[in-house]
Length: 248
Image 1 (tube, rainbow, N blue to C red):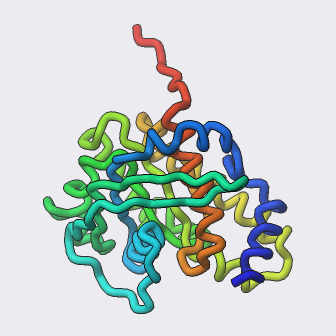
Image 2 (spheres, rainbow, N blue to C red; image 1 turned 120 degrees about the vertical axis):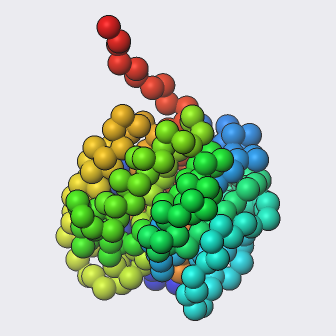
């Protein structure tokens, strides 16, 4: 999809989303060692793109037909090689990767999301751009319910576990628009609203949230660009000094 990639580049230049393209030098110098051997978990609503994300990480073709993942589907350790700008390559070993169904029944059972997230260093929460535009992160709606669940789960996760949101299917949104400036402004407002909600809901664990990345699992070119930004955001957030409040 060369047209989609070109459009995405134009879109990114117009959007200037916080975090996009930042911390590149630090990522190249330190990310290989930091990411090596990390455990990740992939959660999110049904049909958000979890299986496709795992397929992309493993350099496999994405599934053509959606199917519910078995509860606690364990995936063997695998290596990820990502080509970054200027010819740099990051070689990551992912261990203990677990994918799980997205229905609330899966989320809330004893063997559900908590069991697969508790040993993860990074939890990737996958939603869609439609979830964003339809504001499903507002109180009472599905994404917000998942955020509420994350708040209750965080005390039971690893002390330094990080949460990163992947907003899938951005290619569909871009392809349905011609006014990229207007779309960029619209999504910038929606992403800011999402960030505010996540930080509010996850308090006092908001420092664990490393941001949200627009991505497409369908377009390999868009995916590659976006996952570089996501990995950079996670790595940089982990190394950012945390300001601790004074206690009386």
